[in-house]
Each structure stands twice: as structure tokens, then as C-alpha cells.
Length: 203
Length: 321
Image 1 (tube, each protein chain N blue to C red):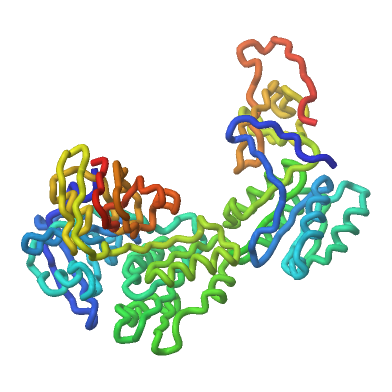
Image 2: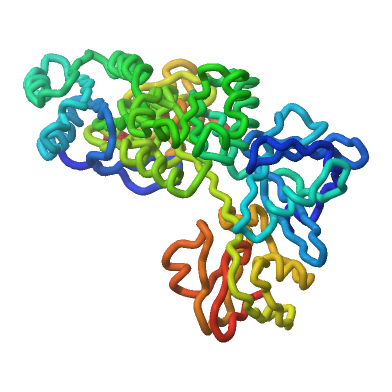
């Protein structure tokens, strides 16, 4: 999969880097199918004893097995895979609640995976400087409707209709690290009859 | 503007000889008023009028942050220093009136911490005594590791173990040495913050060990006040004031500037906080940078000086004051 194509925007819109090994006693990786290659790249370039300190959580795409096999073959101390991001992030919370200072977290994949894992890690007391993120895959956004607070997953269009309150939402670059979501605000509040074209922009 | 512009008149309410090198001083407001609130890790600046010499030294508050009727500090006697601690030990008695600055905290507990790990060396114990009282009240787990040269010099060691039980571990150089830093820093729950106060070598060892193990910088806190070093007398020209001043051998540049009545920012008076950073207009000679504030590039440029701890040797130094 190609590298991330996120454009520069306002300060709150997250930007991501490239995973690289940091000093640490334990290294936690969370990836989805689009980010698996990043985990493999880091592991293959790592010093020999590195994998003994590595814990990997993986969210495959349904029916896909090749990457599971490849990640398993890296020989991490722990490797588990889960069908959904939420399940994997919940497991990350279990792991981090027993973790020690000197832990590093590496996240690779879509923004939803990255955002949810960052929020869970912060809750466990992991400093943001111990978290590295590499974006891969879809630019689909997790959006919170600011009016009814509904979370809308995998938003690819601008604007997007809130499935709960039916308002037409402008998806802003304003991002909440706590909620791991972008802000969606009614785009035609002055004139609800205004006709606005819905285009697919977050691919 | 500096904290010491608004000094508080106090009376020395008690002087206690803790051991052969450390005395505790307690202060109350001269009018019996409540003293300003502070948090664990805060320090005050004590003004000492020793004949014609005015000294100002910073000392950490060790009394309870929840007790505003009085403040307590502990002073370690340093016979090779500029005379501040010697003055406190020899001249200050109960009933004496003095002036202190309001408290300032450059070494506060990070209240987001899930646990506080405190490492003290020698007289560096004092800020932790206030912090442990605060952490206990807040109900946040903490651990203190306190190293001293010998049991006889380890101020408050027994009373801290009585008060805080097995949350306090003590080490003496004459009985096995200090804590195993790698072991200690490798086994702390996520969300722990480490705080260290003590000799320079101890601070460096803790910061380097923690960083090497992967601790984020934001979780590592340290405080190291320097005493202004003694040295040869030198002259300085203050460009805005248009005057020349002389800094005596046991005086700091900051004290000499203050004595001339020229306004200058300052806070910690120990090379740590950065408030007194001053621009150098011209410098023919060498600045002895003794602070923890300026980086190597700033030092090499000879365009900045921290008057609280740094000195000068050479032909001419002109400051933007």
C-alpha cells in the first residue's frame, strides 16, 4: 500500500510519521491490514533481541490470512489478532494496564485505529511522546456530529448526513484526540432547503 | 518584576538543630497572618542582612502545604560557600525578624501522574517532605528513595519512616550505597512520574538511566539549585542605567545589580528558572557560565548571561540593563 497522503491543514488535524525503534523496555504494536507492512518493516530491521520485547495486536480484513501468518512469523513475545479495532484496542488497554514505564507504542494503519489506540493509551498513562503513528490505508474519517453526538464511522464524503439527526454535516479538520474523531457541523443551518452536492473526498 | 519585590515580613519562630550540619528554621508572619498558599516542591527566597552584605538564598519549603500558619526550611551548613548557610546557622535565632519572598514552585508534582517516584540525595530531601504530605492528602501512590552519606547526616530519615512506613526506603553510603536505579526505574507502572533532587551526579544518573530505559522526558522532573560560586571581584557596566558596578568575591552579579538599585528579573536565584537571562552588549573576556539554563550555542555566542550564578573575568563586560 502507498504512503500516507494527508495534506497539511489546521494544527488540530493530526499528522503522522514513520515508525522507528525508540529506546524502551517493551514495545507494543497495533496495526490493521493496511498497516501490517509497517510492523514487518520495523521488525525486519530490528536488532536480534528486539522481538523478545515486542507485543503485537492485529486487526485483519475479514478472510485474509497471509498477513496474519507473516506477522506471527516475526516471533514476537505476544501476538494476538481481533476481528475489530474496538476489540484490539480493548486488549491494548488490558496489556497497558500491566505495563511498566519504558513502554513504547507503535500504531500503523487507518486513522480510526490510530485515534482509538492513542486515546486508550493516554488513559493508561502513556505519554504521547512514547507513541508513534504511521498512517496507511483509507482516509475515511470517524466523525462526531456536534449536534446529537452520534459517532459516524468510515465517512468518505463531504458533507455527510448524520444518520441519527439527519442534519447535513460539514466534516471539519478539527480533530479531538480524546474522542478520536473529527468534528461534523451542520453545513446549511441558515437555510436547510439549500441544495449542497455531496462528493466523495476522503478515500 | 520578581517574586522578591514583594517580601513578606516574618519572625523566626523556631530553630532546631537537626544534626551536626543541618538546622531547621520555622517562620511565622510578623502580624500572625496566614502565609501564602503553596504546593509541594515550592521554595522561598530568604533575605539575609549580614552587616553591609545582603544575601538572598532559595530554600525549599518542607512544611505541610495544608498548614499556612508557618513555613519551615532546612539549611545545610556549607563552610566553603559564600556565607549564606553559615549566616543562617550562626546568626539566625528564634525571635529574629527577617524577610522572605512568596513561594514559587519550579518542582511541582505532575497531578496527572498515576504514581510519584521520588529520589532524594542529602539535603535534597526537603521538597519531598512537603510533596509526600500533599500526595498523601491527594491519595496518589508515592515512593521515596532517600540516600545520604551516613545515618548521622540523614536528616529526618527516622521520622519519615515513622510517618510514611514502607513508602520510604533509605540508603546510606557507609552502609551499602544508593538505590539500584536500573532496577527501580525498570519496574514502575505506566503513568509514573519520577522526581529527583540532590547532588548533580545523582540527578544526571537518574535522568540518563530513565531516558535510556525509554521514559518520556515529560515524566522526569529534577531540581538542582546552584549556590552562586565565589570568585574574583569584577566590574560590569550596565548600559541602560549608565553605571559601573563592582561584584565582590562572595557576591553574585545579581546581588550586585540589585544593590545598585537597577531593576532585574529573577526567580530561583540558582541558575535553573531562566528569569534573569540578560543580554550582553559587549564582552571582552570570558563569562563563567554556571547556570543550567543557557544552551551551548548561547554560551558560545557570549550574548547572554545568567547573573544569579555566572561570573566574568576579563577587560570589560557591558550588560543590557
